[in-house]
Image (cartoon, rainbow, N blue to C red; front, top):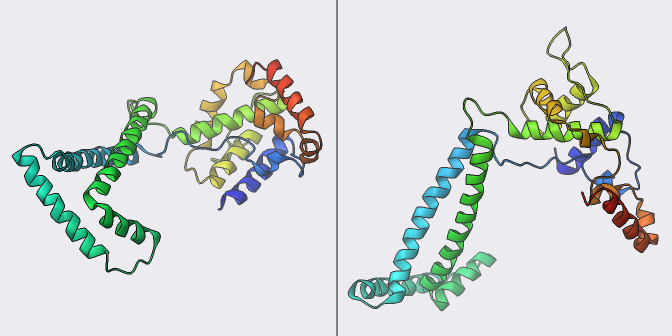
Length: 266
């Protein structure tokens, strides 16, 4: 299901509980609540595969850069030998790439690298690769601490986050605490929130038990989650029609600023 179809289906599921959004409003083109992922992996096994791949890539990238750096330095016998090897590499790459007819932008870039100095261009790209890998390593370490350092089988964090965001959306729209229930005739949802949550999981292709995620989410609700006034800029913009924004943008911005002041800038 493509993203636009997902958004349409989510509105169909959510609006009977939380109220409809007029067709001329910006929020019609946005999901009814945040559906983005906080963790990038559904399982700890998938997380560990990427973590190990990043660690291996960093070791090899840093090793390659050390060789390139040694050849560029050229201040002792060892570095002179490496520099000689890199010169051969540069000549070979230039000779191999120059005669080729470029079929893409990448081919043109490779030919240019061969012309100006393949090893220097390679060193520059390896530096960038190391930087990006280190950033990814930092992110993965943070996610490991937040999501995966738990005893036993870790929960489905994405399912929990979606259930909690939907529970907050329902509480804010209705002023009531959503409830989770199962039919006595089988593993079927028996409440509005439960039925909608199960359908939301299907639309977002989340394989999880609606009861487990829903029960956890409802327990996390706090008194401030039941506020009915706009809680953020997108909510405020979503409550104004396109014509209102277009015809009186200054007044619209002033209105949004006042609401933000009232809500403490949230």
